[in-house]
Length: 357
Image (cartoon, rainbow, N blue to C red; front, side):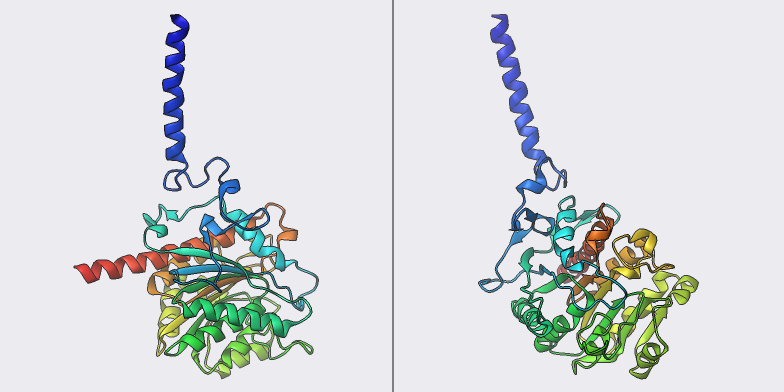
């Protein structure tokens, strides 16, 4: 009889453990649940979707989502020294994001409560043809915008941004403003014979007739890998440049408030592009050696504020996993995107509450 009593006791314990496990497997309770990475939807091989969201085929997608995540595993001409391996970043960032959910206690908000999000996998690239790759990016983003969704894209190098903005322009009813976080102006007309180099995306973006060049804002510019001609070009087209000295003197909150006013002035859309080297090299081991940069908290708070004001797309580029064995830069990219999405959700929540008040 003692053994029978023990058996009943252990049955009760086992039932309770199973009940608790069932609760804990919900992202609302523990984002990094046991074996979560292995149980998430896969985009390819062992790579989980970003934050475990549903994987969709944009060519067959009947209904859009609020946000569609995708990667562009593209490495074009290296303009700063040596091979970077940034085509590996979409995979690394997705793996890093397996640890996280959509809740930030700093803002007491879970973006999954307000936003529908999906992962469209990676855009097809052709290592032998920048032109085909840029066309593929444009086509993929045009489909995403055509479904009424906002693309959040990870590179790859910075050359991926212009075709995304071109797709926005094709779907936009009004002018576009640009918020550009970077150590460098990236507005060179050409690099050697490469018109698609990673040091020229802002020049290409400025040629888009839907982009209001006076609403292009560069944030975090600094260091000896900039040239006088690039600064002169920014001034010539009427772009606003917030260099690191001004940010340190004024503070990030003041700078972002003004940057948003400029990017939103006479525009209907604001697009955000982020190069990893806007962050100081000490916090960005998987990026270029650019010092005296932004601190992570400055970027995170800026992206929350920008997201809350409303964006029509965001990309995060220039993460180099092969030089970052602990994936710190990939994790930082995931944190940055989550902050932007929490901001976007906060803005949606505010509009909903205002409409029902």
